[in-house]
Length: 325
Image (cartoon, rainbow, N blue to C red):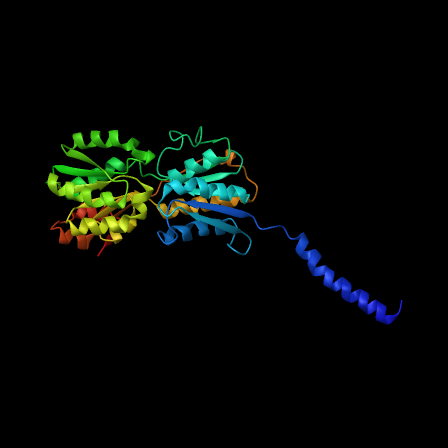
């Protein structure tokens, strides 16, 4: 072979080698993230989810791709969003909040689904049992429904003279199974509990106006993904109307609400990320037990308490994870 022909052949082979190497690389798994919220609502929770993926060896845009779909707190958009993820043949769908999880389960029986919810997944029909879920669905639950009555006790402890308490719920939210338990807890504490339905932002002002009409001494916010997304607005309304209020999420207390008590959302999102990573590596959701959160956090806003003329008992301060000043 002539030297010129040999060099040409060698150069052609060198050009082919990178293409062949690229062809042999495994394609990055794609994870679908179906959220009821807007992209900027809870950046800390998205960071916790990515940390969970990282714990299993996945880093976004390096060896895993994430297709985000946000409903912007308009749950009627969820079916179309999950249909798009199915069309893109994602490896797993992560569905934080009950509305997203139920829509995803109804849409596919083959693509693995990882939920993150505050209620009972068996009662909600997402899985048949917690230890071996079966099917294509598993996930993480927080201790929000289980500790709902404890929130009422904490509010009563901080505002002992209040006899009328407002209980704002989203009637469209499946986790309202806690209502019966809450009414029983109110009776045991000698409290008069008034249910206030609020499914949209427009209902918030009406609910707070009703609180004033009832001369309520406190407000308990029920579990709802919509309320989580709007918790800063709800905290601002509580401050404006001088209402001692408690919710499940830390951000509510940071935004000016009096107290928050509930399962750790950041921990739950991180665990959901871990499960998504494990499934992307080949594990079956049917064999991954539903994880039940054990971490519960209490936050008290001292500045809000002072503005409301409340004194936080030393015993309650000692139990708090953080006193926000």
